[in-house]
Every structure is written in C-alpha cells, then in structure tokens.
Figure 1 (cartoon, chains in turn blue, red):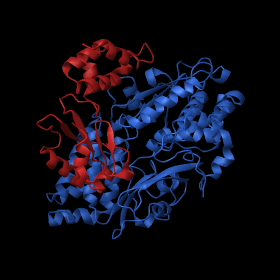
Figure 2 (cartoon, rainbow over the protein chains, first blue to last red):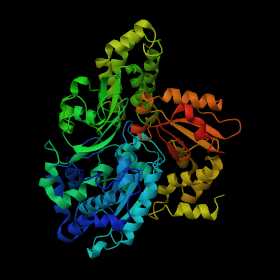
Figure 3 (cartoon, chains in turn brown, green):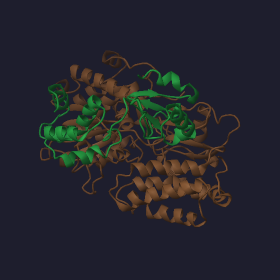
Amino acid sequence: MSEKPLTERIRPNEAPGVIAEYERLGGYASIRKALKDMQPADVTQLVKDANLRGRGGAGFPTGIKWSIVPQGADAPRPKYLVVNADEMEPGTFKDRVLLEGDPHQMIEGIILSSFAIQADIAYIFLRGEYTLAQERLEKAIHEAYESGYLGKNILSSGYSLDLYLHMSIGRYICGEETALLNALEGKRATPRAKPPFPQASGLWGKPTIVNNVETLCNLPHIVNRGVDWFKSLSKTPNGGTKLFGVSGKVKRPGLWELPLGVTVGEIMDLAGGMRDGLSVRGIIPGGASTDFLGPEHMELPMDFDTVGKAGSRMGTGTMIILDDKTCPVGMVHNLTQFFSHESCGWCTPCRDGLPWLQNVLWAIETGKGVNEDMEMLSRHTKLLGPGMTFCALAPGAMAPLGSALTRFKDDFERHIRDKRCPWS
Amino acid sequence: MLTEALKAEIESHIHEPEHRQSACTEALRIVQRERGWIDDESIKDIAEFLGMTTHELDSVATFFNLIHRRPVGRHVIRLCSSVSCWVLGYDALREAILTRLGISLGQTTGDGRFTVLPHQCLGTCDRAPALMIGMDLYQNVDPTKLDEILDRYA
C-alpha cells in the first residue's frame, strides 16, 4: 500500500478529533519546526525543491508562486494568504473531504504558507453550501487560537497571524483568483485585469497569495518529512500524492489518495470498473473544464505533464465517466449550460457566446439541429478559446466541447440526421 | 431596520475595520436567513450599515447564486444539475419532485412550503444524485422515496 499522508487521519463518516488528538498524531509539529528552526525563505525553497504543484486545477508550482511576493521591511502591509475553498468545478469533490475530515491539517498548512510569505492575515474563502466544513473549521480555528498556533507571537516566535473564515454565497467564477478577491472585498466577483498579479497587488491592493485546500494540506508533511520523502510519494518528477476521484456509472464511485502518475486504468479499477452492461466512451479527467479522454487512455499516467501531453489537463484529478448508454451531446449540453450560467458577464464572447452555444447544443439534442451547426460550434471553440476572453472560464468551457466535437462527431451528426436523440 | 442582534452578528464578520464592505456577502446571508429573501428594504438596511450605496450592494446581491432577490418558499430545494448528477439521473429526479409538488422549476408551491431551483455542482459527485433542502444535504437520492425526505419539512 502506498502512503496517504493527506488522508491517513481521516475517519470516514466520523467527525475529526479535537486538537489534542491531532497533536498526538504529529499535528502542528511542522509549525514548531518552521517557526523555530527555519527562515521564511527556507520554507519557500523547500516547497520549490519538493516540486509541489498547485492542486486547484492549474498546477502552478507553489514555491515559485510564493517567491514573487515582496519580502522584507519595505514590503507593503498587511500581506494576505487566501485559501480557495470554494470547490465548485463540476465533478469535483476532493476539497470537501479534506475540509470535513481533517480541518487542522489545512490550518497547519495555512500557517506554513503564511509564514513563508510573511502574511499578516489569512482568509478561508469557503463554499457556502459546505456547512459541515464550516462548523468543523470554526471549531478548529478556535482551538488553534487557544493553543497558540494562531494570533499574536505564535509559539513565542515573534510571528503573528490572524485567520478568518469567510463563507461564499456561490459563484463558480470565484475560482478565478482575482474574482475571488473581489468577492472577499464585498464586490461583484468579476475577474480583474492582470498584471498586476495578486502576489504584488491582491486583496485591497496588498500582496496576496491564493492557495487551494489540497495544496496547503501537503505543506506540513513536506516540512516534517523532507523533499526526498515527498518526491518518493510520486511516480513522476512532480512531488506528492494526489486525491483522485471517479464519478459516473461505475460500480464504486469514490475518492482515493494515490501517487501522482497512477494510471487512469488503476483509478478505474479502484472504482470497480463500469456497472454491468456499460462500457467507457469518454473520460473527463479533472473536472468540467478539461478535454475528454477516451477508453484508449487507460494506461495514461495521471499527472500534470502526462495528461497535458495527451491533449487534456489533469485539472482537479476527479474524473467523470461517460458511458456508452449516455448521450454525449446531452452531456456536453449540460456542461455548457453550467458555464453559461456561471459566466460573470464581464466580457462579450463569454457572456453572449456561451448561451448561444448552449441553445445550439440543445437544438441538436432535441432534434432541431442543422448541418451548419457543426461548423458553427467548431468555430466558436476558437472564438471563445484561449486569448479571446478576459479570463479562463470560457476557454475552460471550450475544452469539453471542442474535444467532444472531434471524439463524438458521429453522435452529433446522427442527432442532426435523424432529428432526434438516439438515447432518449 | 436591522435589529441590534443582527447588527452585532454582521459586525462580527468585519475583521478589518477599514473594510466594512467586505462583510456585505455575510450580511446578505445573515439577513436572508432571518427574512427568507432579500427585499429592497434589506438592501437599504445593509448598505447603510456597511457604508455602501444601495446600487453597489445590489450589484453583489444579484450576482451570487445563494441570495434570493425574490420571495421563496419556507424551504428551498436545490437540485444539483451538474454533470455527474446529470449522468446519474438528475432529469428523472427533477421531474419526480416537480410532479410531486405540482410546480415548475423555479416556482414556489401554493402553500409557500417549497421552492425548487436547479443548483451548481454540490461537490458530492460520488454520491449522485444530490440535493439540498435549506442547508441540509441529501445524497444518493432515490426519486421513488422523495416523500420520506420532503415530510421532514413543514
């Protein structure tokens, strides 16, 4: 069995233990080590050396992200660490498990990340629907203050940090970090122009890092057990384990912590394979905004670079399976409907293009499509693609659509030719 | 008018005194919990309390999925309509609930008991299909056993 540092303390369907129990299992040891024996730059270097890449979907190297934050006496204050705990990518259910199952682990990661960039204040931006996580985080934050891991002069180190929980009121665009910052400031959550990047000018114009929940949960383990150990967890040059999930019509949908580089087929085996009588037609590897892979990808290692080379993205690592009895056009319509609804409306291609595409897909699905629709859809995957919109929402929406138009071309054409959905 | 208790609760979400506006989303959530939805009066009350214009606050209130700017029923049923739940039977579940309640999507039952809305991925895709009633989450929902769930809400 491979090691599972992120999830080993989590007891399914049980509340996490109190802070004393967490400490007994080694919890908060990394804070003592970092604040006593390390400089902030040492923590950043350690995370760089460990090749930890962000687990929110984009996969940016965490240490490099931190290293852009202004340091020293002249740096603007306060500096902020913001946790993106607004999990809302369709098909993604990994951060919920970490938040509900082991809130202290993430708080420990927050303190390390904050220490590395010398943040004064940290905010957790939590999905409003995650009420169990809210309850458990509120308790854990209180305990961490009581135990001296948060607040003034943490463990007599001279370093101080305040941590606040902010409940989101729901919008997918808050996954875009500058939109999240606007939401946190109490504004309409449209993305901001970049540059300046949040590292230089983020929350209220101050240096800000936004990290994902799973990313932060890795940090205590890297500090405690070192770079070599962390790299040894992975089968690829990127360090660590990853939470991988499967949803769709498989026998045992679920979530597993596995080495980076485990294959799609190995994850599917853990999910028990397809339900009887069904086979795999498509695989969305990491949340709604990633390109379809197919049954030919069972040997593909799940890592940022390998999935990228295969023409998709690992994204959040939670796979959604399209089976051979479910309509691919209907599925892409469903995905496009989501993105259309969640467009913030700021830029025209996204605001007007996505509803248009949603309508055309619905027309095809309900037998009202025409041959020219295929060319129109295909053209729009470019018009709403990378470089054409203000942020990554519409290009993300084009990933499943564009790949479906190629992979399931026959199915689209059959809908148009037969003037009906063959699956309905 | 916001009660003193509500004001105190909203105030507890202002972590940096120079940024009162940052608490406006929490304020909307809190006031909606008390009043069911956010009417124009609530927008005015909250905006005044946090030092915003009503237009600034309304641009926020109309933007986010969890805030209602129109009246809703006593219990809001949010059906996860995203991709994994769709694959696992969202359409059938939606039709079962709407038939059971005799309303269309987005409507409120005549007795004011339930409003049914489609909702974005609830992040529990391995236990699809899912729905929330108020803030209670239901997973692996069986459309034939809806009454067991709905009967809990008066």
